[in-house]
Length: 225
Image (cartoon, rainbow, N blue to C red; front, top):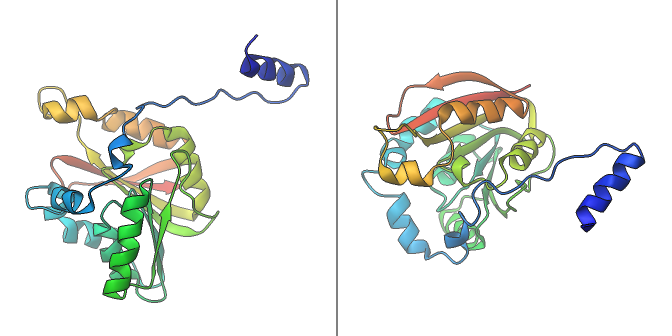
């Protein structure tokens, strides 16, 4: 008998709760971020023609951030939104630039120091956790990153725990629709909008509103319940 099966059998016999082990839904999807060429990714992420870059100011304005807020940029990448959030929440606020890539995080730290953005804290997280403390943030922002969650259930639990009461979870991700979306999106993005909503609401969130700002991406705002 396999060790895991034996452990589950023992827990059942002892009357302890038995939880299924979550399997990766997209094995290896983050492998190419392990040793990123930062300048290359800046050119890809921060270039004209990428919808979330072209409309970055409108996206930030829609979030209605206030001075003093605690915001987490999950999958911060090159720090595009982290830097913008830092200006919005001001010196009394805090921005957590969270990314699974140590290379991205080190460059965000470097750029933050150079630009005097002392309210940014950059964190290397794991594939199952945000690395954030409980009840520490007002808003979690996930832009074109949800489809990179290898373990969405675990990550959503972590974000739910990190958010304060009535905290917001914002998801921007690619629309996946057969006959409409590009071949790249159809092959790269795991779940469509409706599937994402079901997964997030099952994790203890409620869809509060949907913004119609974007075309290639959907823009969803959830609240912790």
